[in-house]
Amino acid sequence: MSTEKNDTSFPPAEAQADARGERSDTVSALERGISVLRCFSEDRPVLGHADLARMTGIPRATINRLVATLLSLGMLKPAQAADRFMLGPGVVSLARVFLGSLDVRAAARPSMQAMAEEVGASVYLAVRDGMEMVLIEACRPRSSMLSARLDVGSRAPLANSALGRAYLSALPEAQRNQLVDSMRLLRGPEWDSIAPAMNRAIGESKRLGYCLSLGEFHREINSVSVPLVGPDGEVMALNGGGAAFVFTEERLRNELAPRLHDIALTIARDIGGHVPTPSSG
Image (cartoon, rainbow, N blue to C red; front, side, top):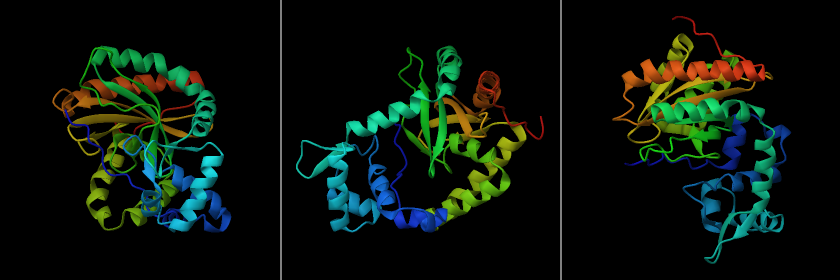
């Protein structure tokens, strides 16, 4: 079964910053270094100078200096092939500190794993990072070979994924509108083909408490997500799903959505957060 991912190449660092309206408050060298690190992904674990220059829009000479600095700090390491690099152990150390501070993972994991085993679905918990959702917990049924092979650290686009749409639905309107405007600028001409389905899903999430993505992020994968708000106001999203021929739209709505909502309520109770109340039944 195919689980091919959409292209999530980053636009030039300058375009990302302009869309966020942060140019006057940021350090451009640091921003560029982080944009280099964000080019690496599960689909692109090994990259070279030319790849990084193309993906970020940063001049090659600057890329060379950034890579040299990141290598010296342990954030990158040389790959076996010449002029190729991978993420280094320094990134892992930072990720471990971040994940270790998330009490929500400990609260969520037992219920998520129980659901994964009982319904045969992959169950994810994610937070936003830039224009994507990043998984901070992933539970899969041990007996199934049909689940999407995403793991902690995997990313999903805000506009195309159920995770992103649920997240957007729980934001205050002004914040959501600002983020949508940034996505529109970054997506360019393709935005007109993305926005209608995203807007419908956001509206559905606000009415029903959940929203769907039917093969729009992963081919042949259907999923449903519900939003969850932590005690500090941070919005997260829970997701469940799998192969489209197993997890039909009807099953997502009637079986997985209520189960995810119950899990979200349990997590919210344990961490002192809340689940947004739908506007209708």
